[in-house]
Length: 79
Length: 202
Ligand SMILES: [Zn+2]
Image (cartoon, rainbow over all chains, first blue to last red; front, side):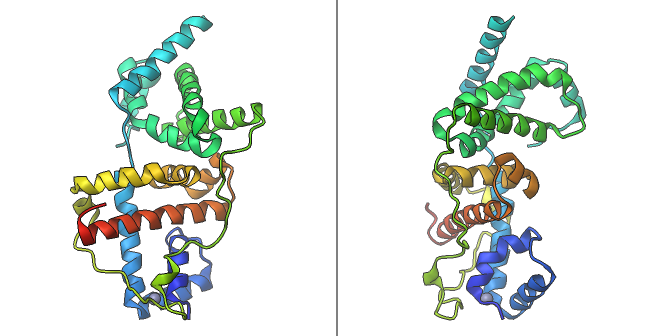
């Protein structure tokens, strides 16, 4: 039986579908038997769902203007 | 936020400046994060600026065979890799350790069973978490402190949802490297969220 520590190490590989058939089977058997790891995996999925949105940043207006300004500069010197 | 609406892409490619500004607003910080993972912090801004110039120049020829997102990241990653070659530079600090990333060892007993099992979270949907503005600040801070490559992998996979093989190619990392870096970033954020659930602070 896989250890709980092993489950926490391989949890992303499991979620990403990177475990082979047997590894997957053993992983699932552990999750069925261990409420803590089951909880851990649920929390990891929540982290993924949340941080995909919370991790996105928008540029400030000043940054946008700077990028546009440099593009105009580059285009006026090359033409 | 998805900017893949065909009408909008059409406007963008036809040279609409407001649409272009929107593109910059949407992608710029993520592009900087990805470029840093390839060339390091000091020249990432310059590389991204070069990429923007090239994107602006080539937009009219953008073939909608690939998604705009993939196209944009291909350009910035190629600009970064070209720059790296030109300067004969080695990458910034690389995190090549393939040590399995897991929770800290002190969470487990000598058999690898939980000594300190995960605590229950009272905020348990992404929507509930997104309402917490202080947590958002904690996440911003944590992301800004992630090692460059971890941040780049996180940005391409988690935020932009590119598939793992595309992340690997764009960053020129091995498959196992990408997986370890991604998992490390996730666990770091998990610990931040856990701490926030327990204490209400970063
Ligand atoms: Zn377990």
